[in-house]
Length: 116
Image (cartoon, helix red, strand yellow):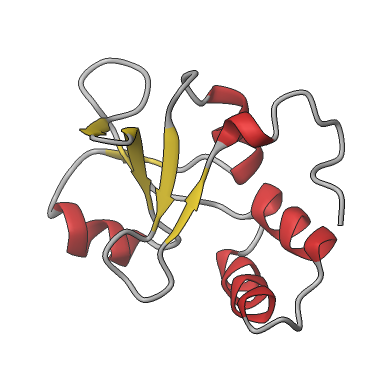
């Protein structure tokens, strides 16, 4: 599995205009994320006015701060995209300054990721 720290670095570089889209994409695909595990297989979603979102975190500590003690699982970014229910978006590190929303629909069918 990849390093979420590299993903975090790539997000900061991209936001400042210094990042490379391909590196950001690769870092996302390789990063390990942490998700609260529901009772049944799948993702735990929150329904919002703009559609369902799934909270994912770049660290176990971030998950614990947001959700408290809970069951969890840790997919890669590639797994998140492959397993995402249709119509759901991911909120990475919700409630933080570096919160990021990823819509898997933007990437469905792309073999190597978004164009730079």
